[in-house]
Image (cartoon, rainbow, N blue to C red; front, side, top):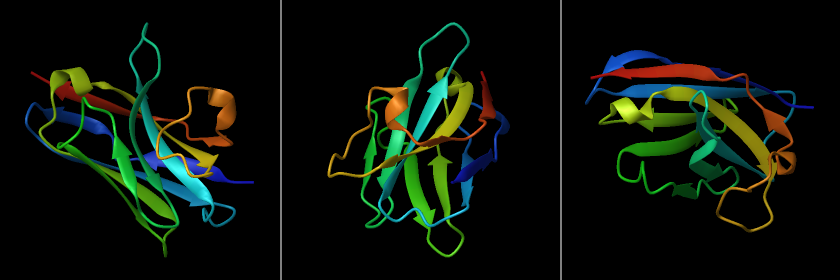
Length: 127
C-alpha cells in the first residue's frame, strides 16, 4: 500500500517557475514508474511527464517538453516536477500516479493501470 501526497502548487505569473513534489509513503517505488497528469475542469485528464523510478529515465508530453523536468530522490521516496516558463494554459490540478513498470516509457491510457493516485495540487498561472 502506497500513499501519495502532492505539494508545491500555487499561483505564479506567466514565465515563472514552480516545483511540485509527490511524496510516497508505505513502500519503495522500485519497480514502478511515476507519471504526472493534469486536469482542467470540463476537460479530460492530460499526461504531463513521467519517470521510471529505478533508473530515472524520463518522458514528457510535447506540450511541456523543454520546460518541465521530472526527477526523483531515492532517499526521500519523492518525485518532483520542475516547471519552468509556465504558461496560462498550464493552469490545472496536477496529480502524480504510480504504475508498475514493464518496459514502456510512456503513460498508460487507462486509469485502472495505475495502482496509486495522489490527491492533486492546484497550479494557477496568471497572464
